[in-house]
Length: 132
Image 1 (cartoon, one colour):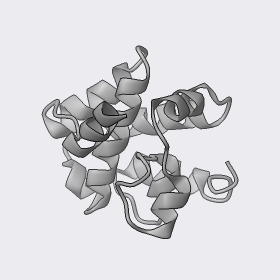
Image 2 (cartoon, rainbow, N blue to C red):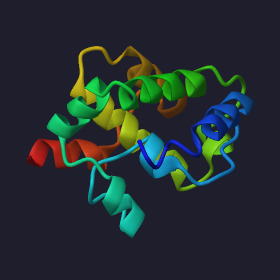
Image 3 (tube, rainbow, N blue to C red):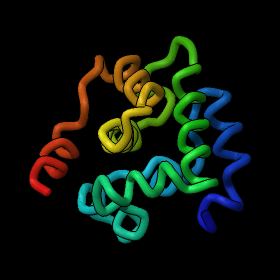
């Protein structure tokens, strides 16, 4: 929450314009810990499905993740690479795979995977979740 507080309005504005321009990926669309190698990725990484479910239930973080996911789904006529650039396009796929598997109420996450990734989940995330 603290990391999102000063930038969340900018995040929403960037997603509405269809182009991520600043640095917030790790704490808006978190992925499994261990997939990224930076200290920031380690700090904001999610430990597994239980923590992902807690994130979704959180009174602020869950609704923000859902809102941001819907905003990405609403971007017309752009590829995920055009919206996020690399490697954030890969981080988003990891995040959506994690949260789609963490809940049955996953329509927005699955829709994003369908729209931008041909319905294909991130194989590294799937493998790590299977190993746990």
